[in-house]
Amino acid sequence: MFLFIHKQTSKRTEIGEEGIVKFEKGISKYAANYEKAASLISEGQLKQAEKIYLELMEIDSDNIDLIYVGLGTVYNQRNEYTKEIQHYNKAMSIDSNSYLGYLGLASVYYRQSNFEKALTLYRVAKTSAPERPDAYWGLSITFEALAQPDSSAYYAEKFSEMAPDSKYAPLFKEKDEKKDTED
Image (cartoon, rainbow, N blue to C red; front, side):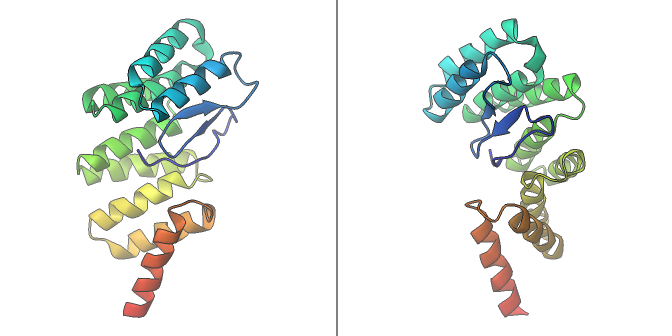
């Protein structure tokens, strides 16, 4: 999954480049559980991470939408797209402004080459959180896949401006420089 470090508007979460939900310290009394699940996903211990998220579902009702996003990430890593889609949709049904849900679902459709659906969802994510760079990155690569280089370059530039320290920013800069030399 290609999500980048950012914070929810509510300042409740971060999401790492691997798409793992991480809580800021002190936001949830179960923050250690979320961190453990994120760590387990990074280590490829998906069954254990899934177990923690399912346990959290029983005890942390304040963050149920983010638990569904976390489970979606587990299923993403397992290539279980049907479950992944179900969990992102569930997150969005709980919180209709679930930026992470829209972003996760957009990435599923992008990976399945359903670029029109991905484009729609990346646009919704951008609208719900215009200050976050991830949706701009998704829009750029989706427009590139749709053979719309001008739109791709526009969103690549926006992404690079918003996330100059991202490991992906240099890739966009190289693309822009290459385009400039071709013109």
